[in-house]
Each structure stands twice: as structure tokens, then as C-alpha cells.
Amino acid sequence: MSLQENGRGALRKYRSMNSDVSQDEDVCVSYPFEENGIIRNRSSSNYVMACSIFASLNSVLLGYDVGVMSGAILFIQEDLKISEVEEEVFVGILSIISLLGSLAGGKTSDAIGRKWTIAFAAMVFQLGAGIMALASSFTVLIMGRLLAGIGMGFGVMITPVYIAEIAPTVSRGSLTSFPEIFINLGILLGYISNYAFSGLPAHINWRIMLAVGILPSIFIGGALFVIPESPRWLVMQNRIDEARSVLFRTNENAGEVEGKLAEIQEAARFMIKDRSEDKAVWREMLNPTPGVRRMLITGCGIQMFQQMTGIDATVYYSPTIFKHAGIRGNTQLLAATVAVGFTKTIFILIAILLIDKAGRKPLLYVSTIGMTVCLFTLGLTLSTMGNSMFGISLAILCVCGNVAFFSVGIGPICWVVSSEIFPLKLRAQASAIGSVGSRVSSGIIAMSFLSVNHAITVGGTFLVFAAISALSVAFVYKYVPETKGKSLEQIELLFQNDSYWEDGEVELQDVQHLIQRE
Image (cartoon, rainbow, N blue to C red; front, side):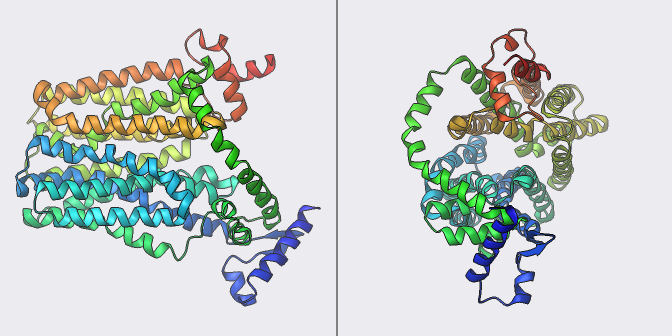
């Protein structure tokens, strides 16, 4: 059957399923029509983009928490009289506890659906944020923090899965980058919230700062009336007609709908078999071949370096950094953090534009080398030039430079590389291992930052981060290949070939040479 005939048959099924909608209304709500022999859906791209934006509001929650906590903790410490150790635990526990939500999110989304898992994540976070905003003691504060972390873990896990499953192939890459963009937007909004409410009394302002984080959850509740369920999950539940209807709304070429539906059904039939092979997959990762070992080193290593260079500590504790540089007054400190938020948001947008043009490895070099220079300069500045106007200006410049270089390279690219290098049967489990390492590293650094500052000074801490960042440059040189423009099969062959890993750097031409030899 031709694509046109397939599309017309699919269009008839869609009309029969939506016969209660008028012809005029149908055109406005992503109704398929025939144009030059091809069944098209004019508004599908806008619809998918709207769904991706609504789903990514969960990422705003994560970013907002990271940003707002940098300022709110100043007033929480003043109001509730918490110690520095309690401050470290309160800030850092979120990254570690979010693992529980992420690990439970897979089975939950299989049971109740992707859409309702997004809703569940928002409700749990909303409850946690409400408890924190009303807390009268550190114990209650931690209870709310734990709930917020679990909800955030669910949200961070399910958002990219949902977007990948509703997005058409042609736009999947750009749409799946939305969560990273929205995390940075959330950080910026958190910084702005800190500055906006810092003038209120200390027993009120931090509560309002935290309570504002509930707003994205409310928007997510409204989005449930707009976004569809994942067609893949609907097929798994044998709700084929509903899955077909969703595919009509999310694909521009309606003639491809039946083919995509058949592919999803075929994949669902293999689901039980794939689950039975889970133990074999874990055995392969625990006793890996040389090729799989290289993949694990590259994928897990780049995620660990992403956090070990201290980016979360820089964002969480930026007011502390600026205070040591010489800025006085909470309002001035929080105003300086807004510049950090704007910088981070702008450069993540630049990265999205460059990643498929400049390539992964060149951006990683720019990112890691730039971060090393900024961290080293920041360490020297805080150690030798504190409390001077030049020292303050240089510290702000170094912090903004550090987050800019992070956002344009290792920040988003670590997730891209991790999703590209693993073969399909190992991808989910291997990515989970990398995520665990990333979150644990983030939590440990956030929970120890103030204690390490007391031991070796703030400047000394950033010199340590600079040394780790320098190691990340060497890691990129030796272990990270260029994957731009390469098929997944070519990438897999590259990791399995011993000769191209013996000389150190993985060159851009290695894949072509390998394919020619094969």
C-alpha cells in the first residue's frame, strides 16, 4: 500500500473516531487534511511543542529549587537558627533523595502512564514545597525537603521519556533538549525570586521564596487537560485506537501514522522478552567486554566530571562565594546571583544551537578548558584579592564565566553522549548508573562544601575544583570520541575496536577508517 493510500485510510479512521467534532473545529484542533496527495496535519508541530513545554515544567521545579535555595538558605539560617552542618544536609540531601523518585519512576510510569506520572511528580513536589514553606523547625523542613526530592526525582526521570515518546523523529533532538533549557530557566527564576523578596522580614521572605516554587506544579495540573498520554504506553495497555489518535495529533505526515503504530506494537510485543533479559544485561555490565568497559568509562565518567567540578556548589552557594569576595548585604549578594542565572540560561541556548554543528568534542574542549581557567582564577582571586573592588568584579566575572563554559559544553553534552554511546539493550541500565553517580557526586559536594571551606578556605576549595576540571580535559582527550553525524552502529563499532584506543585521543576520522576496514 502506498503512503498516500495508507494516509487516506488512516484519515478515515481518525474521522470515524472523532465524528462528534465539526469540520471547522477539526481544522483548528490539528485535523488531518490532504495536500498534493499527502495527508498532512498543519498544527502538529505546534501541538507537540506545547506538550513538550508543559511536560518540561517539571524541570523548572528542579532548576527553581537550585536557584532559590542559594538565597533562601541565608534567611532560613537566620530565622530557624540552623547550624552550618544542618545547612549542608538541607541543601545537599535533595540530589541524593531524588534518586528514589527516579528509580521508582520507571515502574510507576509503566503502571499509571507517563502523563499521570508527571502529575504525580508535581503533586508530591507541591506537598513538599508546602511543608517547607510552613516549617517551624529543622525537622519539619527536612521532611518537606525529602518529599520535594522524591517528587523532583519522578519529574526529572519521566519528562525526557514522555517527550521522546510523543515527538516525531525529525524534531526529537531539539525537543528532548527542552528539560535542560527549563532547568536553567528555573535557576534564573529562583535567583530573581530571591532578589525580589529579600527585602521582606527574615521570618517571611524565605517562606514566600519556597512557596512560589509551587506555581509550576499548578500549571502542570492545568496542562493535564491539554497533553495526551504517550502512544507507546497506550499500545502497551492495548488501547490501540487512542494511540492512533495521539499519533495523528503529533505527526505532520498522517500517512506515516499506521507505520509508526505498527512499529510501536512490534516493540511492545518484545517487551516481555526484553524484561526477561534484564539479569543478563546487568551481568554484561558487571563483567563487561573491553568495548562495553570503554562505553561505561566514557558515559559514567563524563557524568561524574560534570558534577565533580563543583557546578552545583557554585550555584547553590554563589552568595557565600560573593560574600567572601567582599560583597556586603543580602540584597547586593542576591543581585549578583541574578547575573549568574542570566548567563547560565543564555549559554545553554547557545549550546543547543551549536551542538549539532560544531560537534560534541570541540564544545567539550572549550567547556572544560574554559572552566579550568575560570575556577583557577576564582580560587586565586578569593585567596589573594578579597574585599577589593577589582577582586569583587573578577570574582563575579569568574563565576559567570564558569557557568557559561559549563552550559555551553559539559552541562548538556554529557547527557547527549551518554544517550548515544551505549547499545540499545544496555542504554537504560547504563544511563541509570551514570545518573546515580552524577546525583551522588552532586549531593556529596553540596553537603560538604561549607566544611571543606573551613578546612582549606573558599579559595582553596575552588583551586581543588580547578584541578578536577583540568583532569576532565585529559578525560575528554582520551576517552570521549566525536559522535556528531555518526550512526549508533558506527559509534558502537568504534568502542569495540581496540586499535583506535591505544594511541590516546579518539580522532574524528576513526569511525570512517573503521567502517572502511569492516
